[in-house]
Image (cartoon, rainbow, N blue to C red; front, side):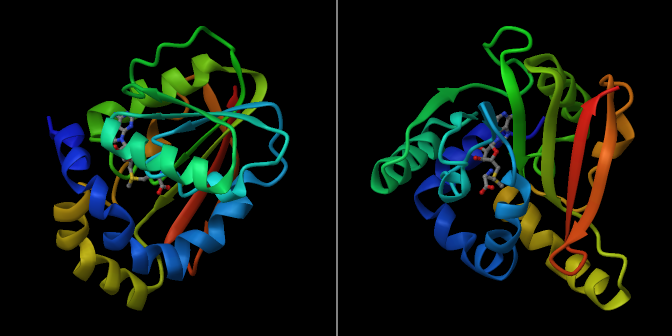
Length: 203
Ligand SMILES: C[S@@+](CC[C@H](N)C(=O)[O-])C[C@H]1O[C@@H](n2cnc3c(N)ncnc32)[C@H](O)[C@@H]1O
C-alpha cells in the first residue's frame, strides 16, 4: 500500500505551492458548487490544507479530518486566518472515530483520486455510515476527460500528478457506490470535463 501519510507529511509545507496552478485554474471555481446549499454538521474528509474553508456555509458546524497531522496544521492556520470555526481530527477516512449518523452531510474534495483502489469501497462505506439518512455525500475529483485533447493533456500530466500527490484520474470510485449502500443522485462534469462531482445518498 502507498505511504500516503508519509507523502503528505513531507509535502504539507509546499502543498499550496505545488497545487497552485490546479487550484487557480480549476479547483477554486468548483469548490463553491460542491458546498452550495449544505447545512448543519458537515464532515470535510481529507481536508488537506483547508482549501474548502472559504466556501463553508457560514452557519455550518464543520469537522475536517485528514491522515496527515502536517496537513491539519496548515488547515488550522488557514482556519485562524479566516476566523472560521472548524474542528480538526487526525484519522484515516477508512477508520474514522465517529458514531453512526452523526453528520448531516460529508464532502471529499480530491481525496478519492488519491486513495488506492482497495480503499475506495471502505472509504465510501464509512462516509455512508457517518451520514444520516437523507444526508448528501458530495465528492469532487479529477477524472479522465472525455474530450480527446483534454484527455491527452491529462495523460501527459499523469506521471507528475502521481509522483507529487499519489493521485490518479483513473480511480474507479463510482463502481463501488452501490456496494457502499449508496446511490448516485447527481453526476456532473465540471472545469471543462477535468473534474467530476458526485452527489450520493443512501440507497
Ligand atoms: C490531494 S489532497 C486534497 C486536499 C483537500 N481536500 C483539497 O481539496 O485541497 C488529499 C488529502 O487527503 C489526505 N488523505 C490521503 N489519504 C487519506 C486517508 N486515507 N484518510 C484521510 N485523509 C487522507 C491527504 O493527507 C491530503 O491532505
